[in-house]
Image 1 (tube, chains in turn yellow, purple, red, blue):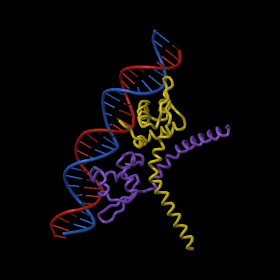
Image 2 (cartoon, rainbow over the protein chains, first blue to last red):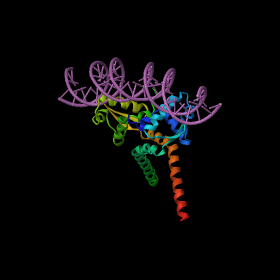
Image 3 (tube, rainbow over the protein chains, first blue to last red):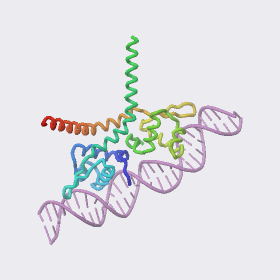
Image 4 (tube, each protein chain N blue to C red):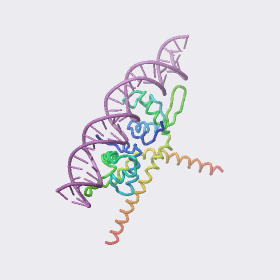
Length: 105
Length: 105
DNA sequence: TATAAGCGCAACCATTCGGTTTATCAAAAT
DNA sequence: ATTTTGATAAACCGAATGGTTGCGCTTATA
């Protein structure tokens, strides 16, 4: 079952988890403390995040620390690029318009 | 039913639609020509995109042109900000390290 | 005016999602 | 050696998702 980062970040809980562990690597139990759901549910979310490599496991004895794979987040940024081009272009056009108006005065 | 942009872009078809109409406003039928599914299915996708305001309708007679709401895409960019901070920071740290090594030479 | 075209809604269906509870297994602690 | 703790897997369940077909409305065209 190939996972997709966009599907992964679609869930608000998973986005919150990412924000959490972006600050500091955490175990599933520690993460679960922040949410109103079972540890098992969190585990399932971690599995999805791991499968699409947004997160990496760091095994220490019987504990598993999850840490964010920040490079993977860049893929979303990369996808946004095509749209960023557009909004920067529009901004530039507006800027140009303002300049023209100013000149005319 | 309140829609969420992250849920909206989770679907690959919807991402493809956004990329399409980013270039040029299009009618549902025209969009449907690009996909292997019915016009009605596309219509449902457009409804979702409209509900979360990623897309805007422009009614012209019996045709409906859909155009992208580029500003809404910035919300994704805004969400990424917290992670961008991290990866830029790491890059900076690496940069610093390289400078230090260079100085030592 | 009759007909065709463009669009969206409703009902339906199979599959996926996001949670639960229960069970299992390995590592730590007593 | 036994018990506790941390983590995952499996089975289950209701709700949401993403598609279909069929219908009806409005606008354009013959």
